[in-house]
Length: 305
Image: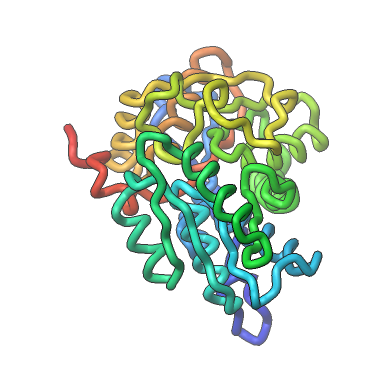
């Protein structure tokens, strides 16, 4: 939020993203209202700005993060970009472990903010990056501040205190269903917890890839992955497994019919909205579009018919 003086640091622009009306299912389901949080309006371009800022500022409050330490974590990209941006604004060094096969745009963005990248085995995915970063920290614990986005309650708290509150305000409390993808699980856990406290009848649906071999960058197949410590399955009324190609198709449809250029995981969210729409007569469905498609152009997401 910008101060009344008209000036603000970049971190003060994180959050308060627009809630967009999604029209692509209206003809078939005219009594369903669908909305999506446009998280690429965050200054770092994704929903992960919220968690990165929360974890860094919590580390500062505890005294665990000082300027003689390097922020280190594993990331598939968006949290890394967010760490790099927030750290640059606050004057910290950053080292990030990423699978070697993340998109070229994500690598370039992280480097642009001045962070160092260490690449882990592409074949081991995000779990390989987690193991790699744990080894680096264990070898030299005093040099690093390791937020550990998969285990840090401040990740989910960012959504409990921010995303969920915004959704309730933006829908005037009318939200009946909430859908979000699972990666670190922070967005789903924090938002769902707050929404359920507000109204236990709000239905929450978590979306993961349908199997461990998938093309939904940023999402985790929880049963075959290192399970995030912040994951709380009791908050999910449903957990659905999304196939890759239909998610891609819906991401492309959003660009061509709604003017919304979104990433892979937004396509998965739309797949879940479409599935839900077939089972309910009416409702106010809110989902999260974690990022824009412009950081996936090199992956072929928008290069196919």
